[in-house]
Length: 317
Image (tube, rainbow, N blue to C red; front, side, top):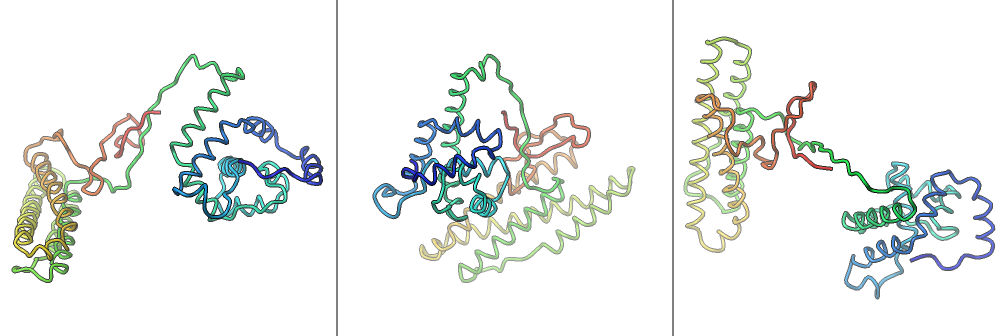
């Protein structure tokens, strides 16, 4: 839980630097005297391995681990900077209750941060709230609820872009299956040159307004959809042929076939929504995809002038 009892010299040294502490350190230092907080961190450290308590060297004291991670958060430091600053600063050593002991290195601090995961942090927060209520800092009569958008790392979704992504992913996966299976009866054809050409033509057609530009876009989209359906047919043929292979060869490509089947289902959905929007004028289609790689992403409109549409998940805080 803590380092062993400090020597008389360390006590005198700590008293000497106590006046150099920042105001927030004094408040936090008093709060972290709570044994329940240390017990939570201590238990989290012991769950890293079934024999963490009985084998190996002694773990970093829970008190040191908690205080160093709090200091990292307050200062917004990296683990590397945290190690360097605590080693060089006597005030930080005193606050973290390290004294003359060895400061945990960067790699050890990373492991501590991983051990004290979301569940442990939630328990720490709950305990801090209890302490705040006991000390009269908060009364907890009101709760404020807000929502925020966590955006996924995707490009702006367009029908042509989604079809291009799906075609590329399907072709790449089929080629991998072909290589790993040692060849197929019919060689997988790469349609990506034609797909890319159609996508670029659609992008240029967007510059043309009016009926003529609309007809040109529809004509190119019709060709792009035809190519996407051809690639989907190829993927179905590949899956059927893999089903006829020997169990050993089929087992080698099992994971790739599952990935191909999943991506095929997503691309079929993209084809349906493209046909509905471009040729039917239907924009609100159930189960609409905005990314074939991050299918959980949703279209979120929060009325922001600078960003009317956001793509990700809505999180309630």
